[in-house]
Image (cartoon, one colour):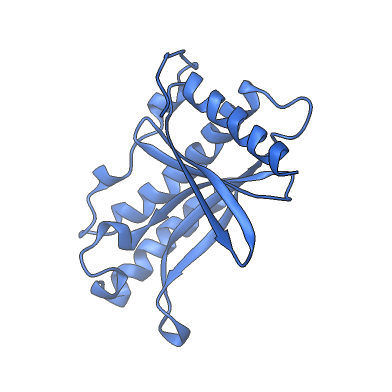
Length: 182
């Protein structure tokens, strides 16, 4: 099973490199379960692909956290500003059919909204899995995630809208770039 898992991860890595994505791998253990995946940067948009050994799919996520773009995190924002950003992002969420997870910061009752993660699944173990499915899944989470992130950023004076890359370049047809992977 471990060999099959790493073969699938290698296939996905190959597709990412073939499409010109910048790729970094990661690996760690969560309570005895091996986790591995890729951090993919495509046209300044970051997507994370995570696989749990034993699962038959990888989680694909585009994450926008407000706290990643603020000195002092979301605690530095007043409640009204954060609520406005949350409402704007929530409206954008309704315009997409992607799976979206609400992110929070803090603990207990002090938790505050901190962004969204747009999620999809990739099935590299399926016989029909290929370059096209990989590309469409990554493009899909970026297309769904950028408008949500942009809507939130527009409401936050402390966050420049430039921190949210556009999707225009992600619309291009795949291009082949030969690279060395270390």
